[in-house]
Length: 329
View 1 (spheres, rainbow, N blue to C red):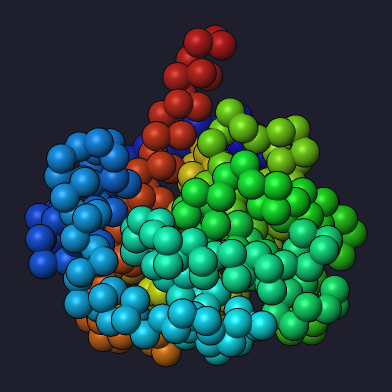
View 2 (cartoon, rainbow, N blue to C red):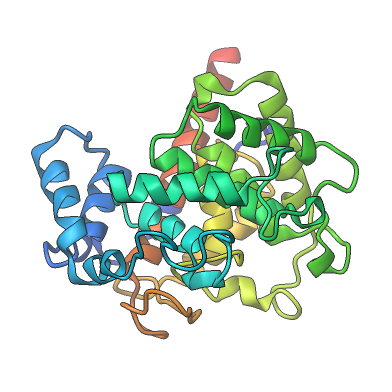
């Protein structure tokens, strides 16, 4: 996506990375982090033998095996009639977590996805925790699209309807507001919506998708964050994230949408870099109710992967923009 001006952008952020966390991220003891590192940081393909081996090990990895063992055949991880029930440990959030861990689709997870579609999607296409149109939240809809896309629902008419809803809502006056944000624009919800568009292959994005992405990106990039005050929580990075967000997730979504060259990204990316310890392993600073594999205040493989991916994509899009600028001279 184009920035607001044509000023050349710095491309030396890679030089500011500290340490080398890749060997740590590739440890076989954590097949999820290994799989995600191979795919998202080292660009290995799904058919690569190491990638296939790591992904195949995820279901039997004890933390994931425990989650799968808790799934009920009828109610899944909560209540069949309300897939958002239970918050961070409910059916919708658990599917989102498993997708973020790299879990492949299985018949059991397909049944859970069908439950979310049947009982969590409003007829308008948006996702609602209680079936009413007033509770079609931007965050839930964005997360549901990302999760269902991961589990192979791209092209399903129900997912396409959700995308259409998100696209229209993103460009509708007051479409980015939330009652839980005092009627103001919800920056967390905007990040989830951006992340949903980021999982779409660029070639499949329609002009309406592009307009929605630009509206969302401008809303969050022009937002006056007060990171030393009311918005300090954005600097507490965490995994997994439910409806909440943080600066790493924001930068990751924007970078995957090619906003790396946008001057408004500079401050955000520099803050992510500034939070990097000397060993290059970003810390988990936000506690969660679900999946407490990593302790608060300790290095997080998933936060590190997300931060490195954001910086990688930002650098690539900056270099691409610079090459295009040079060709135009």
